[in-house]
Image (cartoon, rainbow, N blue to C red):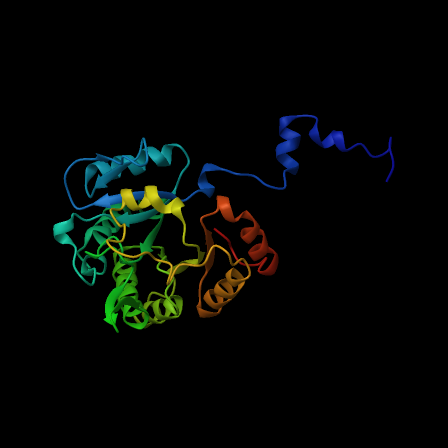
Length: 277
């Protein structure tokens, strides 16, 4: 291939041509918009996220989603937010079939049907009074999150959300076996078509600070380094992603993204067929 026969600039000559041959195209419909929902009251500004609000389950939430639709955004992930007095040791507000997220799911599905795709976060940190992502126990004077008890509650949460209209559930707690436990529970209840978007490689990170303010989910003691990934480990992400895919994840994720672009590239090169969020 030689000049002047081959001229790469031909394919850059106009915007229409560039659009026609673009290898990557980003559209508003490619994004999943996070929405924080609360049981009642008015829309509440989020101090850590200027311009964002916690939305009550009701007409304000419907209008907010309607506005997003007019801008081309049609995919949403819901995070529940509860006042402290509604939280408890096991985070039962997360798997209550009449809880804040199931109510929001039913409201939005009734309002918009198949015009929107709804994802629901699966975790307990927003609902526990201690702010950790599962069932906290004590052993030999030290606290720990009981992995196997926690994933049973994740499964209950996933079934409640699927029954309320979630198209995808998104386990973010980084518990071992969470995807398998959720998949078994969904299938056992007939929700074969409800997908799982797994937070497969979720690193312990200070980047979560604004989110923890938004969801009122900061841990009251300790940190999450016993279950979230060590920032020093890149190849461990491949192990986590492979396990989730084998357990039934339909979409995998690396989080946070900005500081782990190398890990995103690593995961995509090893699992090119897997949708990566």
